[in-house]
Image (tube, rainbow, N blue to C red; front, side, top):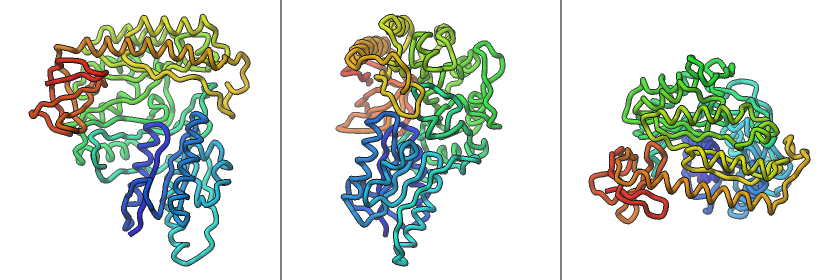
Length: 443
């Protein structure tokens, strides 16, 4: 029996795609093993959003080759598309596959297995080309151990050209999967007894049934297509809730917020990728919205019946960012109900517009700003967590260790409980008694 191991660098979308890739091998007589053990096939799903993540991807490839020099080693994904030569130059690599071609991995590995059987010369193979059609849906047919949350990929690529982002360069234009495939996969995930399904993609809000991206004004009475899709998925029934992953401000309107607020099986949580609270910097980043749109979103959330968890990505030190620009972002975060932040220092990447921009910010200044904003974010998160002491939350418990269960609430808070009345992979309403080390405690 062949042994296969895999390693994922980077975002949750990469993790989803790795699971889809491994699922394609289930038709073979094959066994999954940990990445740090001897295997016949290694698949590394790479990332290049920063130089550090690119280097981690290269390191994982070298590790696999060291573990078993005779194995089939596959490097796939964004780092491969961004700089294929950095992988081709590694002695012992078998196959490199671009970010837009991951559906080719199974066939290419299968060809290599056949070559091995026939004793043919094993040349390095390269599969990197632009996507020209809607890719086949990466169906997952079995439940993975210790997972109660499933990720449902609904689109790939991005139609934007943000100055700092290399993802558009490597993943191509936005493309949405077919409605019937998404519904079929959702039904399978429900049948597999997943209790939460997270809709994910590169640019989630660009999802479109006909692959024609449609902008929505904040006051637009029309439904966004992401809302229409959610309504279709809810019709499937089942004891499952749905969560949206990261979404851009221009894809959120009043109608979507109202729908999320009133629909019980939609999680009360949004991760809004705003990047900056300064219109000057947003313009230089080439983001397709102004701060006014974000304020409209928050003002409408204030009218909600539920307490939404609202997170965001903030990028500091973008070229041209002055101290006043930073202060504007700081005040914006301080004045609005963010419940957590992912704060990143700007890291220039080749092939992006930002790489050649003037006004580079000193690294020491960037790190000072990151530290300051993270401190504010920690304070806001703690205050939000404290506001739930003495209240009830709906939680899906995911793991159990030393008699304590850990789960996630609808509004994306970590909750621990030692109650014998709740079980792993179950949805329970619990009473919050305390806060310990950033985690809510329930009984």
